[in-house]
Length: 130
Figure 1 (cartoon, helix red, strand yellow):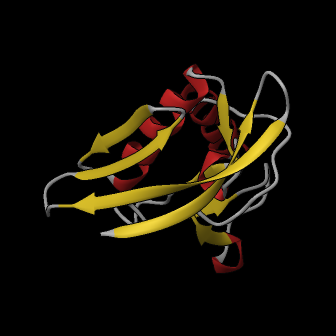
Figure 2 (figure 1 turned 60 degrees about the horizontal axis):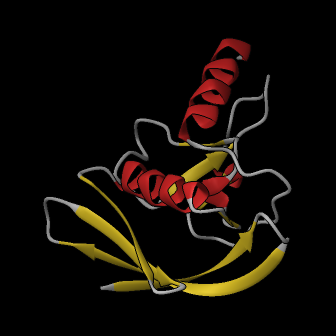
């Protein structure tokens, strides 16, 4: 079982706190879990990034943004990265390289907190731009 410390931003009052996300991988399903204010948040899927996104979206619905690379609007995976804990932080019009690869839970500052749909829209725009 892996653990990641992630900074959360409470969106209604702009306060921050550190929380621990646990990762459990039984070989079939990846499950991310954290507890905040007596509530349990879970993201679970066969795919690593999808499980992360489910956790992130659950936190957003509760009013919390994750300050980590995987939560940024421009975080996406290539086919070769699928299933891993790595993402590219891409820019419109530029092909990504390994220097753009980061860990999903790597710390990242964020002013906006997109949901999975916003990331998908950005990914479409990105692929159209290269």
